[in-house]
Image (cartoon, rainbow, N blue to C red; front, side, top):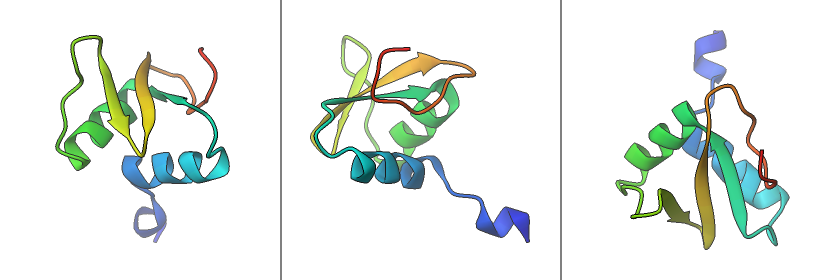
Length: 71
């Protein structure tokens, strides 16, 4: 039952975007960053960011939180 309630990375990023719509950037843990990249079928650009929902999305490294502030 717990597996059925688990949210994927894209859903978590969508919630973060909705919670702070004015934030220009999101920092994600590496595993969620990779999952989002696959889900939206987009690869990071030359400086290593994704653009999703008009936000710059960056990889914050392993063991970090989803945040709008630089870790």
